[in-house]
Image 1: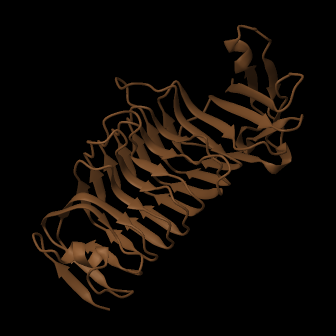
Image 2: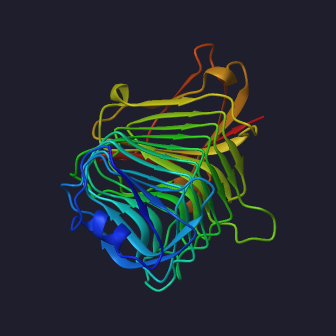
Image 3: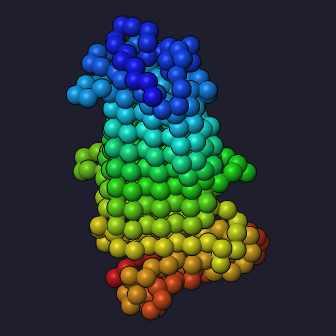
Length: 344
């Protein structure tokens, strides 16, 4: 292993990262106090196993963007700023770690995101990063996420970004991914704290996160929207948004192939939304084990929007916690519905 000391004003960091310098797996590049003006810095794919980190006790600032393209890369302790399209982007590579970085005030482009990991790649871990005040419009997000593979986001903070705090997006037909969000905080974004949009995720786990819209800030329609084939939602705090939590199934699959598991969260979700979509008739299922025995009302939101004031279903959550939701009532397929569950 070789340790390189790269000082501000010298070409060492850019040369080593972009591949014009000689590195080998396991090498470390230490950065020191000061600014590193790198423009759009793209890593050479052959630079596998490279660690770029702040030297002990130092706070380097990268003015520009860093594009990771090599397997086994680790970034740690960097501050990334500047008028760039993204701060840190990870391409189609595996075994990536991004930790203790600060990405902020990216504001020149219409889609300036803080940390971007939208390509296929697995075993990514993003931890203890702070991403804030990025973007000039509602298409600029703190974290922009997509692609196949397993990606974990742990103890990150995203606040006051112009779009979403965490935004997942993949076009239909692309390979599904598996995503874990644990212990993150999303605070006061313009559009919403967390959304998975037109997205074919295999699974999403939200555990022990905090999603907050403080009073006096713009309240988006939904604080958190989750779309996936399998969902686990447990131990989170949901504050703000006209609807704190919305669940949307991913793709037209049979109800028995889909799982929503919702356990106690930091705030009592007395009301949340469930959207249902299946290719064949039959009920969708919301699995609410800790609400067993509680009385609820189930409203068809689409009926309310169409001003068809159908009577709400009033029932009690059974012992197994499974609520079956009869869909649609339409004569055609696929079946679609949008419902609100409110506990009394």
